[in-house]
Image (cartoon, rainbow, N blue to C red):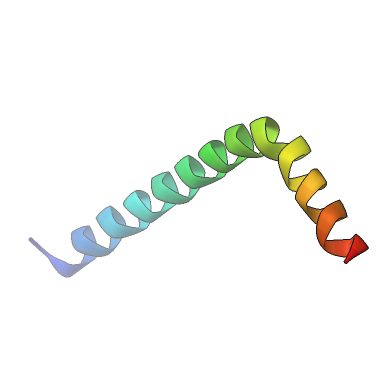
Amino acid sequence: MPLSTFKVFWSALFHFFTQFLIYVFSITKNRQTRKIHYLLCLSQTK
């Protein structure tokens, strides 16, 4: 495998991975926003 093909492959893989992480994070954030907000309020009152 040539080095240029290797670099292109890893950049595409990295791009896909970051997009996947952002997608998963948005889903979990939408589900846990109230829980995180509640925990933040608890930690600020202490």
